[in-house]
Length: 276
Image (cartoon, rainbow, N blue to C red; front, side, top):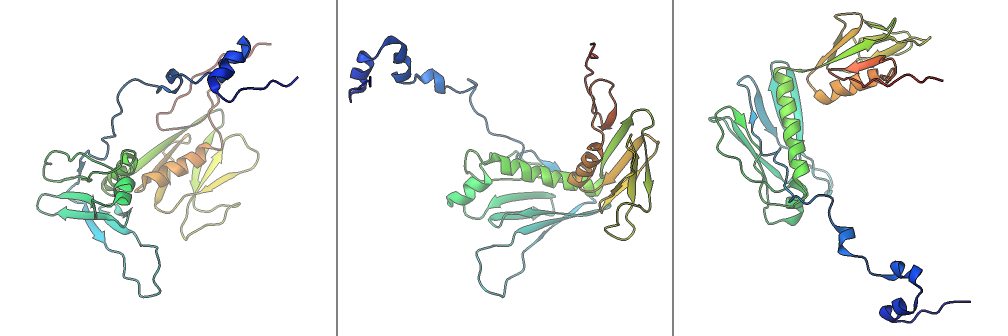
Protein backbone atom coordinates (compact mmCIF):
# COMPACT_ATOMS: atom_id res chain seq x y z
CA UNK A 1 0.00 0.00 0.00
CA UNK A 2 1.48 3.34 -1.06
CA UNK A 3 1.11 6.31 1.27
CA UNK A 4 0.06 9.56 -0.42
CA UNK A 5 1.34 12.74 1.13
CA UNK A 6 -0.54 16.03 0.74
CA UNK A 7 1.22 18.93 -0.93
CA UNK A 8 1.09 21.17 2.13
CA UNK A 9 3.89 20.24 4.61
CA UNK A 10 1.78 20.91 7.72
CA UNK A 11 -0.98 18.64 6.45
CA UNK A 12 1.64 15.95 5.78
CA UNK A 13 2.92 16.12 9.34
CA UNK A 14 -0.59 15.85 10.73
CA UNK A 15 -1.47 12.75 8.68
CA UNK A 16 1.80 10.82 9.19
CA UNK A 17 2.32 8.24 11.93
CA UNK A 18 4.19 9.29 15.06
CA UNK A 19 7.41 7.42 14.21
CA UNK A 20 7.76 9.34 10.89
CA UNK A 21 7.22 12.82 12.33
CA UNK A 22 10.89 13.60 13.19
CA UNK A 23 11.96 13.03 9.56
CA UNK A 24 9.48 15.62 8.20
CA UNK A 25 9.91 18.27 10.86
CA UNK A 26 12.04 21.33 9.97
CA UNK A 27 15.55 21.41 11.37
CA UNK A 28 16.03 23.49 14.44
CA UNK A 29 18.60 26.25 14.64
CA UNK A 30 20.56 24.43 17.33
CA UNK A 31 21.84 21.94 14.73
CA UNK A 32 23.62 24.68 12.74
CA UNK A 33 25.13 26.44 15.73
CA UNK A 34 28.90 26.98 15.63
CA UNK A 35 31.36 24.76 17.46
CA UNK A 36 32.49 27.60 19.72
CA UNK A 37 30.60 30.53 21.18
CA UNK A 38 33.58 32.91 21.22
CA UNK A 39 33.67 35.73 18.69
CA UNK A 40 35.97 35.23 15.65
CA UNK A 41 39.29 37.05 15.67
CA UNK A 42 41.58 37.46 12.69
CA UNK A 43 45.19 36.30 12.86
CA UNK A 44 47.74 38.93 13.88
CA UNK A 45 50.83 37.00 12.77
CA UNK A 46 51.37 39.13 9.69
CA UNK A 47 51.17 42.34 11.70
CA UNK A 48 54.13 41.36 13.89
CA UNK A 49 57.32 43.25 13.12
CA UNK A 50 60.47 41.55 11.79
CA UNK A 51 63.82 42.68 13.12
CA UNK A 52 66.35 43.00 10.30
CA UNK A 53 70.00 42.61 11.39
CA UNK A 54 72.39 45.28 10.13
CA UNK A 55 74.35 42.76 8.04
CA UNK A 56 71.23 41.68 6.10
CA UNK A 57 70.21 43.57 2.95
CA UNK A 58 66.78 43.47 1.29
CA UNK A 59 66.32 44.33 -2.37
CA UNK A 60 63.26 44.22 -4.62
CA UNK A 61 63.77 42.72 -8.08
CA UNK A 62 61.16 43.77 -10.61
CA UNK A 63 60.14 41.16 -13.20
CA UNK A 64 61.68 41.65 -16.64
CA UNK A 65 59.49 43.17 -19.33
CA UNK A 66 58.15 40.66 -21.82
CA UNK A 67 58.80 41.35 -25.48
CA UNK A 68 57.04 38.28 -26.85
CA UNK A 69 53.33 37.68 -27.32
CA UNK A 70 50.93 39.08 -24.76
CA UNK A 71 49.84 36.55 -22.11
CA UNK A 72 47.68 36.69 -18.99
CA UNK A 73 50.45 35.28 -16.80
CA UNK A 74 52.10 38.08 -14.84
CA UNK A 75 55.59 37.23 -13.52
CA UNK A 76 55.90 37.69 -9.73
CA UNK A 77 58.16 40.13 -7.98
CA UNK A 78 61.05 38.84 -5.89
CA UNK A 79 62.56 40.15 -2.66
CA UNK A 80 66.24 39.20 -2.56
CA UNK A 81 67.65 38.71 0.94
CA UNK A 82 71.43 38.73 1.26
CA UNK A 83 73.37 38.00 4.43
CA UNK A 84 76.70 36.64 5.65
CA UNK A 85 75.62 33.00 5.09
CA UNK A 86 74.22 33.40 1.59
CA UNK A 87 71.26 34.60 -0.44
CA UNK A 88 67.54 33.80 -0.37
CA UNK A 89 64.48 35.06 -2.22
CA UNK A 90 60.76 35.46 -1.48
CA UNK A 91 58.23 35.76 -4.31
CA UNK A 92 55.46 38.35 -4.08
CA UNK A 93 52.15 38.35 -5.98
CA UNK A 94 52.08 40.83 -8.87
CA UNK A 95 49.48 43.04 -7.15
CA UNK A 96 51.63 43.61 -4.03
CA UNK A 97 53.67 46.77 -3.61
CA UNK A 98 56.94 46.69 -1.67
CA UNK A 99 58.68 49.71 -0.12
CA UNK A 100 61.85 49.95 1.98
CA UNK A 101 63.07 52.91 4.05
CA UNK A 102 66.85 52.71 4.28
CA UNK A 103 67.08 55.34 7.03
CA UNK A 104 64.80 53.60 9.51
CA UNK A 105 65.30 50.06 8.11
CA UNK A 106 61.53 49.59 7.71
CA UNK A 107 59.92 47.62 4.90
CA UNK A 108 56.22 47.58 4.08
CA UNK A 109 53.93 45.69 1.71
CA UNK A 110 50.58 46.85 0.34
CA UNK A 111 48.25 46.11 -2.57
CA UNK A 112 48.35 48.28 -5.66
CA UNK A 113 44.60 48.89 -5.94
CA UNK A 114 42.69 49.12 -2.65
CA UNK A 115 39.35 49.23 -4.47
CA UNK A 116 39.92 45.96 -6.32
CA UNK A 117 38.00 43.17 -4.61
CA UNK A 118 40.17 40.39 -6.05
CA UNK A 119 43.35 41.92 -4.67
CA UNK A 120 41.85 42.53 -1.25
CA UNK A 121 40.47 39.01 -0.90
CA UNK A 122 43.67 37.33 -2.10
CA UNK A 123 45.90 39.41 0.13
CA UNK A 124 43.94 40.10 3.31
CA UNK A 125 42.87 42.77 5.74
CA UNK A 126 45.17 44.20 8.33
CA UNK A 127 45.45 46.56 11.23
CA UNK A 128 48.56 48.65 10.88
CA UNK A 129 51.09 47.99 13.66
CA UNK A 130 52.49 50.77 15.84
CA UNK A 131 55.65 52.63 14.76
CA UNK A 132 58.67 50.35 14.75
CA UNK A 133 62.12 50.85 16.12
CA UNK A 134 65.07 51.24 13.72
CA UNK A 135 66.25 47.99 12.20
CA UNK A 136 62.84 46.33 11.96
CA UNK A 137 60.67 45.19 9.09
CA UNK A 138 56.87 45.16 8.94
CA UNK A 139 54.14 44.02 6.54
CA UNK A 140 51.37 46.60 6.27
CA UNK A 141 48.28 45.37 4.45
CA UNK A 142 45.26 47.43 3.46
CA UNK A 143 41.64 46.44 4.14
CA UNK A 144 40.46 43.26 2.48
CA UNK A 145 38.67 39.95 2.79
CA UNK A 146 37.89 38.21 6.06
CA UNK A 147 39.45 34.83 5.23
CA UNK A 148 42.67 36.10 3.65
CA UNK A 149 44.79 36.53 6.78
CA UNK A 150 46.45 33.20 6.07
CA UNK A 151 48.30 34.59 3.05
CA UNK A 152 49.58 37.54 5.05
CA UNK A 153 50.85 35.42 7.94
CA UNK A 154 52.47 32.92 5.59
CA UNK A 155 54.32 35.61 3.65
CA UNK A 156 55.50 37.20 6.88
CA UNK A 157 56.75 33.81 8.15
CA UNK A 158 58.62 33.11 4.91
CA UNK A 159 60.30 36.50 5.06
CA UNK A 160 61.26 36.07 8.73
CA UNK A 161 62.62 32.55 8.15
CA UNK A 162 64.79 33.68 5.24
CA UNK A 163 66.15 36.65 7.18
CA UNK A 164 67.06 34.35 10.06
CA UNK A 165 68.52 31.80 7.65
CA UNK A 166 70.96 34.14 5.91
CA UNK A 167 72.07 35.67 9.23
CA UNK A 168 72.21 32.74 11.68
CA UNK A 169 71.07 29.66 9.75
CA UNK A 170 68.61 26.86 10.52
CA UNK A 171 69.54 23.57 12.14
CA UNK A 172 67.95 20.18 12.74
CA UNK A 173 69.34 17.51 15.07
CA UNK A 174 68.35 13.89 14.57
CA UNK A 175 68.79 11.27 17.30
CA UNK A 176 69.10 7.59 16.44
CA UNK A 177 67.73 5.46 19.29
CA UNK A 178 68.18 1.71 18.98
CA UNK A 179 70.68 -1.11 19.33
CA UNK A 180 73.27 -0.82 16.56
CA UNK A 181 71.74 2.33 15.07
CA UNK A 182 74.37 4.68 13.68
CA UNK A 183 74.95 7.10 10.83
CA UNK A 184 77.88 8.44 8.84
CA UNK A 185 78.40 11.09 6.17
CA UNK A 186 80.24 9.76 3.12
CA UNK A 187 81.63 11.63 0.09
CA UNK A 188 80.39 8.93 -2.31
CA UNK A 189 77.59 6.38 -2.50
CA UNK A 190 77.17 2.93 -4.03
CA UNK A 191 73.42 2.80 -4.67
CA UNK A 192 72.74 6.48 -5.44
CA UNK A 193 74.21 8.70 -8.13
CA UNK A 194 75.22 12.27 -7.21
CA UNK A 195 72.87 15.02 -8.36
CA UNK A 196 75.55 17.74 -8.35
CA UNK A 197 79.36 17.79 -8.06
CA UNK A 198 80.67 17.37 -4.53
CA UNK A 199 77.39 16.03 -3.09
CA UNK A 200 77.66 14.14 0.18
CA UNK A 201 75.54 11.22 1.31
CA UNK A 202 74.11 10.20 4.68
CA UNK A 203 74.63 6.48 5.30
CA UNK A 204 72.14 4.98 7.78
CA UNK A 205 72.40 1.68 9.64
CA UNK A 206 69.03 1.24 11.31
CA UNK A 207 68.34 -2.47 11.10
CA UNK A 208 68.04 -3.07 7.34
CA UNK A 209 70.02 -5.66 5.40
CA UNK A 210 70.75 -3.25 2.55
CA UNK A 211 72.59 0.10 2.82
CA UNK A 212 70.52 3.26 3.07
CA UNK A 213 72.21 6.19 1.34
CA UNK A 214 70.50 9.57 1.10
CA UNK A 215 71.90 12.44 -0.91
CA UNK A 216 72.28 15.73 0.94
CA UNK A 217 70.35 18.52 -0.86
CA UNK A 218 72.22 21.49 -2.25
CA UNK A 219 72.65 24.23 0.34
CA UNK A 220 72.47 21.83 3.32
CA UNK A 221 75.50 20.73 5.35
CA UNK A 222 75.35 17.37 7.14
CA UNK A 223 77.69 16.16 9.88
CA UNK A 224 77.76 13.48 12.58
CA UNK A 225 79.23 14.79 15.86
CA UNK A 226 78.31 11.40 17.38
CA UNK A 227 77.57 8.06 15.73
CA UNK A 228 73.93 8.40 16.86
CA UNK A 229 73.53 12.10 16.02
CA UNK A 230 73.02 13.82 12.67
CA UNK A 231 73.35 17.62 12.45
CA UNK A 232 71.78 19.38 9.46
CA UNK A 233 72.54 23.05 8.75
CA UNK A 234 71.26 25.28 6.00
CA UNK A 235 69.80 28.62 4.97
CA UNK A 236 66.37 27.39 3.85
CA UNK A 237 64.32 26.10 6.79
CA UNK A 238 61.93 24.22 4.53
CA UNK A 239 64.73 22.28 2.81
CA UNK A 240 66.43 21.41 6.11
CA UNK A 241 63.24 20.12 7.74
CA UNK A 242 62.19 18.27 4.59
CA UNK A 243 65.49 16.38 4.45
CA UNK A 244 65.21 15.61 8.17
CA UNK A 245 61.75 14.16 7.56
CA UNK A 246 63.05 11.99 4.70
CA UNK A 247 65.71 10.55 7.04
CA UNK A 248 63.15 9.92 9.79
CA UNK A 249 60.88 8.09 7.34
CA UNK A 250 63.26 5.11 7.29
CA UNK A 251 62.73 4.33 10.98
CA UNK A 252 59.82 6.13 12.60
CA UNK A 253 59.67 6.01 16.42
CA UNK A 254 57.63 3.08 17.71
CA UNK A 255 55.68 3.36 20.99
CA UNK A 256 56.60 0.03 22.64
CA UNK A 257 60.40 0.12 22.92
CA UNK A 258 60.91 3.77 22.01
CA UNK A 259 63.28 3.00 19.14
CA UNK A 260 63.53 5.08 16.01
CA UNK A 261 64.82 8.38 14.62
CA UNK A 262 63.77 11.49 16.54
CA UNK A 263 63.99 15.04 15.15
CA UNK A 264 65.04 17.85 17.51
CA UNK A 265 63.14 17.63 20.82
CA UNK A 266 60.62 15.07 19.61
CA UNK A 267 59.41 12.52 22.16
CA UNK A 268 56.96 9.63 22.13
CA UNK A 269 54.72 8.23 24.83
CA UNK A 270 55.45 4.57 25.52
CA UNK A 271 52.63 2.04 25.58
CA UNK A 272 52.29 -1.00 27.78
CA UNK A 273 53.52 -4.26 26.31
CA UNK A 274 50.94 -6.63 24.96
CA UNK A 275 50.65 -9.65 27.25
CA UNK A 276 49.08 -12.75 25.73
